[in-house]
Amino acid sequence: MSEYSKLDKYVIIIAFISSFSFAFISNAVSIALPAIALEFHMSNIMQNWIVTIFLLVLAAASVPFGKICGKYGLRRTYLWGIFIYIFSALMSGLSPNETILFIARIIQGIGTAILSVNVMALITAQVSPKKRGQAIGINVTGVYIGLTLAPTISGIISHNIGWRWIFYITIPLMLIVLYLLLRIDKEWFIDADKSLDVKGSALYMFGIILLLYGFTILYDITGILITIAALIILVLFTRYELRINNPVYDIKLFKNSKFISANIASLISYFATFVVTYILNYHFQYLEGLNAQTTGIILIFTPLLMAIFSPFSGKLSDKIDPQILAAIGMAIVSVALFGLCFLNENTPMYLIIISMILQGIGFGLFSSPNNNVIMGSVDKKDIGTASASTATVRSIGQSFSLGLLTLVFAIVMGNVPIEPSNYNLLVTSSQITMIISTILCVLAVILSLIGLKSDDVLNR
Figure 1 (cartoon, rainbow, N blue to C red):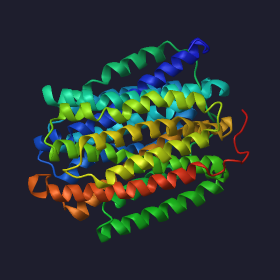
Figure 2: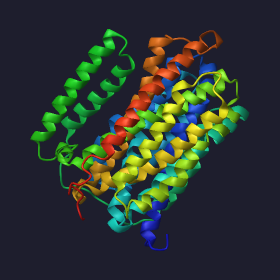
Figure 3: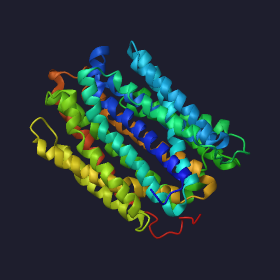
Figure 4: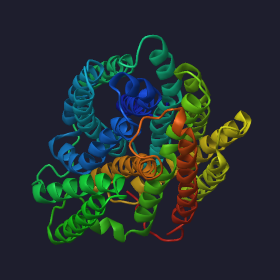
């Protein structure tokens, strides 16, 4: 990092540690779900909601906070996010029942939304375009190192001292970020002189929350009605945003073929892949009878390879068209997920590990170049919106991914505890989910190549 200024280094380190923490807490909780469900006597669907409710809030809040943080200062709002995150982590760990835990996860979603939109905005605002791809790659590496260590550390903690300490472990990291931020005197503002789009923000948040919730209960007429209502609200949101001068989300950016295709490819990629960890976690702990610690060690393969390949692909995307790299990566992921479509209690461990390795390599090649396409295809005044977009599509995709498993659970298994009498239905649910995910990955390959020869990337 010798080519970066001191301020650049501070920003990159802050982004790296923050991204590690977000990734860790989102992935670590998955390993602990069986233990949490056992302690609070939760069903298969309700235990999924421990993660889903966090992702839902993150998805709904990211776009409004993208504007709020830019207006009031990236550094200042980052400090707000740190305090909210630390409070929610303490509350989660101290939760006496599932209701308090759900409330704590909602608050944690708000804090994480503030921090996550600021991470990419800080890098884009501070680091020059010629070095930005590598900086984004380092940031994404933080995500994948967090994902890499989360299963193992979470498994060890959950198995030996209890799942509550999973939430506590990120607090010291947030204190380090707080210390670094206090050493920075510079503030970054984006559209500080413009008013906030309160009405558009409300329409967006309400529409997204209803859409994601409705999707999880599509098996019921209520879920269908809620989903239809959500789509109507989002259409109204789009029409409203096109009419005002300072929208919370500039819909006109979607006239840019590179921007829209990269965003949709990112959305679909997370939709297709986020659920894999949960399927394998349930497979190992329920069907194979492995404990959380052993499961965590096995699940390290995919995120470890993501962490290894992400900085490589980020740096390479400064020299080779990032859309080509992203498409190659997602094609590899498609092969990996296809191999898991036949997952059952008789599947050899080596075949599962091969699929995990391919997924890690493929997603590591996809993520950094795809983010580089998104952030490099907009003008400087739109970096707040683009940053919020990367955070939003990730959280929406992850929410839909886990929502898909919840929906399949409801249709195939019903709202029941996961126990030996319905393990055959767990296998069926996993296979159906993986087939859908594989199809989505193939679609993401195609989307990654849209606008390949266009001139939409702006030279800032």
